[in-house]
Length: 148
Image (cartoon, rainbow, N blue to C red; front, side, top):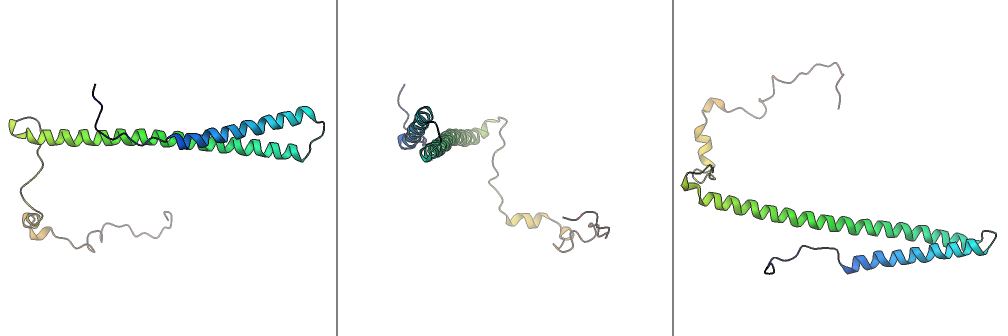
């Protein structure tokens, strides 16, 4: 099968994955450091607090960056599918309009009259002012039950 000449959709690349992996390595290092501190010492010190804070923070950063990469990847796939669908729809509409003379079940796009003919099709008595359209139809009761 020949390679497609279409450009490939944007996918989050190596740079985004690098930052996720880097944050994961830092999180792992902080958790290991915290584990070593807990196993070697009896009392909690400032180092324990620093290791715990670093472990929690880098773990959260890893999760947020990973979720961002996953959402970008899913959005890129949906965007590519939508573009392909729009191209298919427009191509099918173009092909169907070309085959409209053959008597198929296709309704061709209107090509004749412009906007100026619409006013001539209406009778003069049908025109209603924008101010008069809803004058008699609104309920102006003052019961106060329905306020926005």
